[in-house]
Length: 151
Image (tube, rainbow, N blue to C red; front, side, top):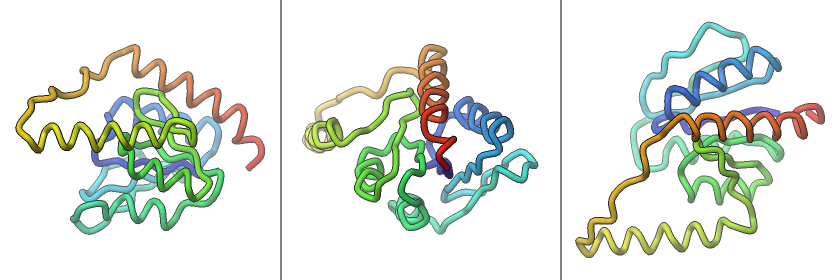
């Protein structure tokens, strides 16, 4: 199993959790971003810089991912592509995207984009907090306990 991180918008605290997991379980974690990412020295953690452009990092993750890999992303269209390719997708707040919820999430995303496009202020996401960090760590641990041993 490989863990891929859509790193441009991933909170630093989530990256830190992933670095510790990489070392503890000796799992490969790859951060993919449009900008240069600094990662700790580790044989299990690496960063890949892709050219700037809309969805370039997303396309690279989908291209490299194998069925059963885990992708950490807050990007709903990327999560949908990950699921289609047989991977798992987890957002930084600890919520898994699934075949049961992805269509609804894509629809809601489109609706919110339309509202914003018509000038409606939809606000932003709630601030990222300790509960989000803990939920992510718990969901990641459960997922890895279930699937990492099969890799």
